[in-house]
Length: 404
Ligand SMILES: C[S@@+](CC[C@H](N)C(=O)[O-])C[C@H]1O[C@@H](n2cnc3c(N)ncnc32)[C@H](O)[C@@H]1O
Image 1 (tube, protein in one colour):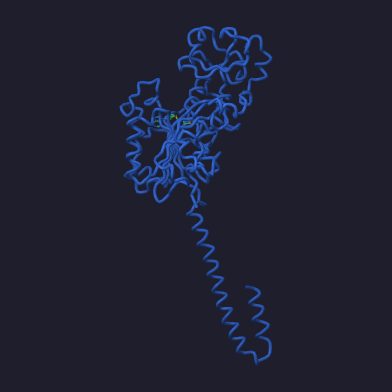
Image 2: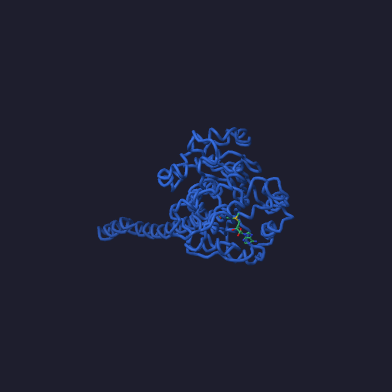
């Protein structure tokens, strides 16, 4: 615009025979100035549209927040989102959440929330990892009849009552949930509220982590939002293909089958040593404590674990599996053999993964920490409830992506 103005000045101060030209040029300047205003207006409008289309952070509610696995997954997924509130009834979990995120979740029963409460957050997305006990294969499988299922059902039933229903929903639970009556109810409410869904059963071992822990996930988007690969709408997939491969649609028949074998996945996983913090210790103590680790220990075995103080975190003794537990539970333990020549479990000298190692297997970031007052048993319990960030992050990235 500076160029046009100086050109006018040159012509205006020139020969009077050029008056007509001056008038035309002045008019042109007016038009150009108007164009500048229009141009500026266009920029402002474009900015507003960009904000509307995704530049503005998504406002997220994190229900059943525990130690914040969902929030860490959002960060890992690099989704432009802000957690406007987290909700958990457990004050110990909330201590850990506050320690790491500097914000204490709303500490109360999710069941007591009203539609007006939810509307007050102006949230676009709800992330939910409700209690899994009603659906676990080891449990009584009372499903919706289990009191622990009621807060989840209640929150779903609030969706049609809200003034501003969420645009996106993400639900995590155990395998078994997908055949429960709670699942049927969830699908019915989502369909009636204008959501399309895509469901997955996925395990960390499919994402390079040497750990088999399949979990159920439901991704839901409210119309007019849609998924990048619409062909998977209303399907349950058991492969991460659609999350990772741009031409996933071509493989549709493969993704709906149960995974062929985990052995192949295991071969492409990172070595388990990368997840261990006590590898040096276990090597030094090779004769006394064989370098083997134990997982999937039945819940009541954890009673043997007593916290001996934070300064003792790295003391090997507290991680040794007592002989009586090996005798009683040995056959039910998931064991990672490291001394192939030793055969008897008693000979092998077993130890538990440390909480840090479990956090590593859940792909929690290095800066995740427990506050000092959280006991060893509480750490295991909280991590046991936790989710795999290696699995959830790509699912969230796929959910929040806006197809062009
Ligand atoms: C499966 S865990 C979720 C863990 C979480 N995703 C994480 O990363 O740690 C379920 C959580 O829901 C909480 N919870 C269960 N019922 C609740 C309720 N009615 N209201 C609020 N929180 C509840 C539990 O305290 C627990 O922390």
